[in-house]
Image 1 (cartoon, one colour):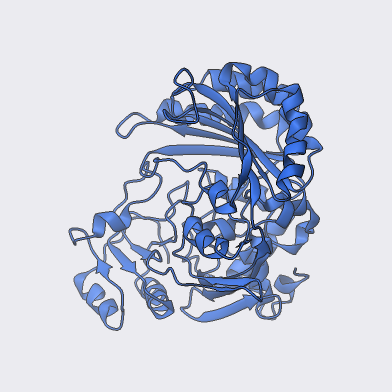
Image 2 (cartoon, helix red, strand yellow):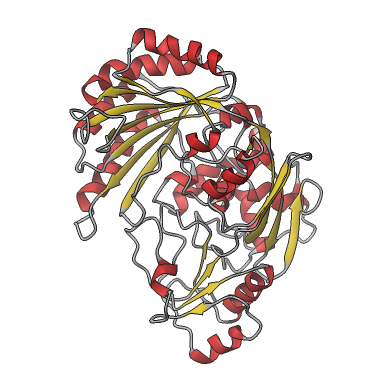
Amino acid sequence: MNVDWPTMVSPTAVKELRTGFAGPLLTPGDPGYDQARDVWNGGFDRRPALIARCTGVQDVAAAVRFAQRHDLLTAVRGGGHSIPGHSVCEGGLMIDLSPMKGMRVDVEGRTAQAQPGLKWGEFDRETGAHGLAVPGGYVSTTGIAGLTLGGGIGWISRKHGLTCDNLVSADVVTADGELVRADAERNADLFWGLRGGGGNFGVVTNFEYRLHEVPSVLGGALIYGGERAAEVLPAFRDFASTAPRELTCLVLMVNSPRHRPYPEDMQGQPVLFVGVCYAGPSEEGQRTLDELRSVAAPDIDIAREMSYVKVQDMLDDDGWGSPWYEKAAYTREVTDSALTTLVERWNERTSDRAQLYMQQMGGAIADVDEEATAFGGRDTEFVYMALGGWEPGEDPTPHVEWSRGTWSALRPDAVDGVYVNFDSDDDAGRVRATYGDKYERLRRLKAKYDPGNLFRLNQNIEPAASADPAGAAISGSVG
């Protein structure tokens, strides 16, 4: 029986795993242990009993079988950027994939093979050298694995779809330690679930992506003083609702950093940052942005032609290891009342590190049939996100309450469910609401590939009581 309390691993058991395991095995006190357990969200200071730093597929399979034999609470770390801290566990086993950074780009075939330890900045540098890209989130420090398995909304998603829509195949170590290939023909049921179902079904050891030609984009931002939020947000909403799919944009309400391009009188002050990425000719993109400029002239205009790689890191910060708490919600319509709520909640923020987002959906995201993948929410217009941040050692309570309060205040204008990569809460009711009618299908799939729920440090889908041995109810119609 699996349990969720810390489980210590005996020296004898560690010695057992060490036989035939190529990578380092770290226990508390070992050199490198603290660095290996360090994750992006500093709100989690967990100490695994054992960290298995995998160098390849055989290491992953050995670690999974070891976890099963010893009934260990198991965390799987890719890029370590999990908002709810799922990358690391207290006690038990941490399967660390970060050493696995192999990658190969097939320029002629427009595909890329990539291992799960890669972050998007590392991936994009390799594909960008050939003018190619796959939609990959909004920052370069996110791991490719977690983002892909959760769906993957990014800067070029309105033009080229979600990250998971561009997944061609995946090699997966399932809960029994076996390696399987999942694609549209082989293990198609698993392939369906991997695209949006999170890390519930196994450990992906290789991702194969379809690439797109993206030699350059019009990227950057239109930036407004924070006091103009009530003026600019309705104009932005109206502009975004008719924008072509080549344009993906977001609004970020944040305190600006203390450096250029902000003048001294705006540094450290509240700003409204309208981030843009136009995946088409720069001249067309500038003409499109002129529609917003004409009704809301920016205080700072840094929209220009640049590489996609540069767009990917423009929201990067030095926040690794800082504590965060996030609440998110989908909406199909951005109402005036929701915009008023955003301004009011921003004015009530509890920290200079607080952030509010509106990230755009639509375009190619909505082209894919809702049933084609496990990902849900394709018919929504925006994702709202309230990110509470505080200093290490500070009481998190007011900042967590601010995020939750913002989410609650937006509920009348939101829909059930959430983009799983954007939320700190993953209770069973929230997960069920996210997947809606697909939840029972996912439970059957979970029962087939992980009946004991070994992989439960995620937005967990509880396995059905028994799997359909024929797989008919699971396979169904897949994309």
